[in-house]
Structure formats: C-alpha cells, structure tokens
Image (tube, rainbow, N blue to C red; front, side, top):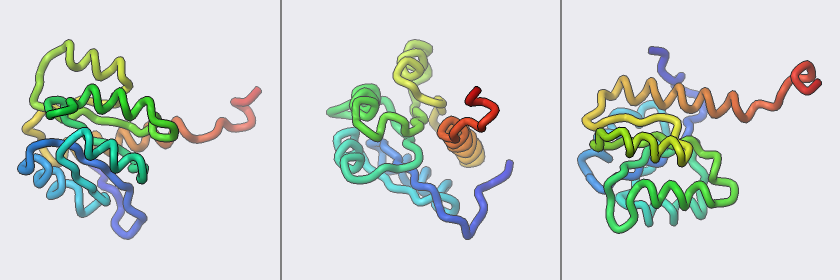
Length: 143
C-alpha cells in the first residue's frame, strides 16, 4: 500500500465515535499521515462542521443522542459540507445498515475492530475518488 507522503500538507479527517478507545486507535493509525480531529458525538461533529470543513469523515453508527445516520443526514443537508466523503466505521454488521448508509452517500463501510493498514488504504481510496470527482472536465470532455 502506498501511504501518503510525509512533508506534504496533511489532509484533515474528522473521526466521530462515542468510544474513547476507538478514537485513540484511529488517532494512532492516522496521525502520522493526517491531521486527525476527534469528537465523541454526532452533536459535537455538527458543531465542528459549522466552522470547519475536513477532507473526510469517519463516522460511527451507534451513538447517543444522535446516531450516525441522523448525523449523516444533517451533514448532507449542510451547505458546502454535503460533498465531504464519509466512511462508516462501525461494529454493526447488517446489510440494512450498509444499504441505509449507501442511500445517504457513504463512500465505504468498515467494520470494527479494524486493521490500521486497511483503514489507511480505504481513506486514501476515498480521498482519491473525491478529488477525481471534483476535478473539472477537460476540454475534450466538455464537448
């Protein structure tokens, strides 16, 4: 796996999970390559997003008082935040949850416990895909 280059401007990732141990594992896996911001609730994530725009969001499903799906719906309704790639990072292994996430525009779904290398690889893939989708079409494609 090709890891992000050191020395380049770090992309910012918002990690949202109500379990401190999971946030610590995410931080340990990513902090060398990304600027990682952690919050322990959907409500705090939304507050953060009112002021900042990360490059990607890692979002747990089962949280209180606002779960991951409710949080994601609110993110998708925010002006200038709806395009942020979101990866669901959760212990819920259920097809209906995956389908619900897909309907809300997630770009990936990772089960906990996760392997740090897998998490890095999937984040890179999501960021690359997001950048490709933002690239303006070439002159040939505009015709």
